[in-house]
Image (tube, rainbow, N blue to C red):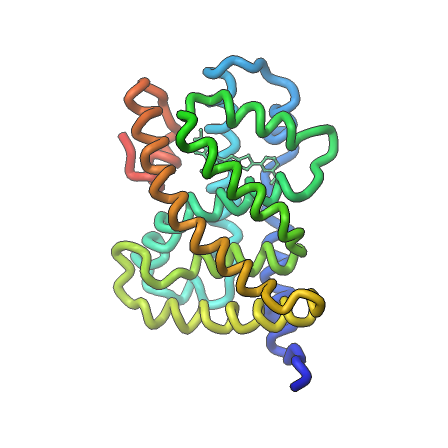
Length: 232
Ligand SMILES: CC(C)c1onc(-c2c(Cl)cccc2Cl)c1COc1ccc2cc(-c3cccc(C(=O)O)c3)sc2c1
């Protein structure tokens, strides 16, 4: 039957996209990708600064998700902590798929490859970037997928999972409709998007190992990253 977006769904996607566009890493931070030196140390510091800025952006975006601020406050924290790494993998992956001006993408790849991450994590990391890039996601899809990732009910320490499901389900339904409408020639597109969410979960595991290996080599993180990643 004909798939159509309801008035409410149209309002919801507009809210999510508006929040997604409103909260971005400041140019003066991402511009540094092109300017600073290329040492392993410098790359790590730069990525740490960008990740910290990204977490701040993520918190602001999340606060704009309809219903999020009505959730139990401890659950709000549990959702942010549980989804931060996945949301940042999504965000940095979308940078790669969006042909960045001024060769950001090449520079970002170079800095990630030379920031003290061991080879065994570099491969799955860039495989993920490639698989996201191949989807050529539209802005609404990127914004909704990020909101869906944040609203994952079964994160550690979430008490009222049903309340989170009630927020996530309409987003998933909406994304499904958008995929059918915006990718009519590719009926399995929505399934491929959800496949990326499964891949994100495995990257969480790799990331925990990345953190450990950085810390073993006495790399320092910012207070915000320590708080959200429970390190130091
Ligand atoms: C602490 C630090 C060393 C770290 O530890 N793990 C990771 C990580 C790495 Cl490596 C890969 C994936 C996920 C994580 Cl979490 C990181 C760096 O994480 C980030 C996080 C967000 C962004 C957004 C970017 C970006 C560039 C240009 C433009 C834009 C833009 O939004 O316009 C965004 S780069 C970037 C790097």
